[in-house]
Length: 173
Image (cartoon, rainbow, N blue to C red; front, top):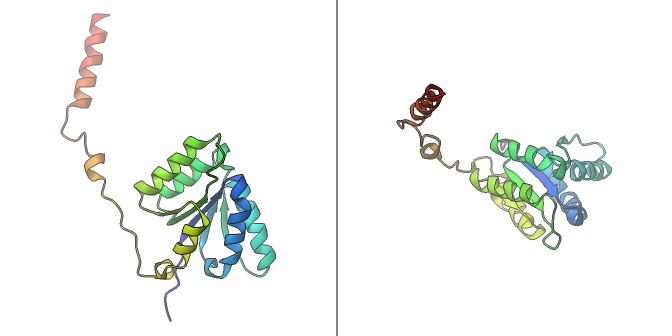
């Protein structure tokens, strides 16, 4: 028996793209069964309602976060950084300015930093979910090595210089 693959999947959609993402999830629901989902508030609520209607006997594993502009985008980013999300399906609306555009950019950046699969439209999502790698239990994404960045202050006198600077300022008073 082949090992079952369980991916962490983020689902997000701008308002104008919610119907498109719901349809995509319903179309691919058999492939999506058994995975763990993280969704921003409104999107997740609508998708879960649609899935329960189509598959009333299936238990779906959904974590519904806050609405994107109300902090859900940051919550999603936190799940990405924590390694809980392998795929982010974020159907963006390219024709509408978003009040939380900086949050959207941050999610896009984190997807790149953590090297997760990121789809911003249905065509890309179709190609990703139809890839043999989606259900391949041996596939593991590579994790970038940022140790050079995280250790950039090792061996440098930054703390010592800061303490000395504060002590000098205190002595002058």
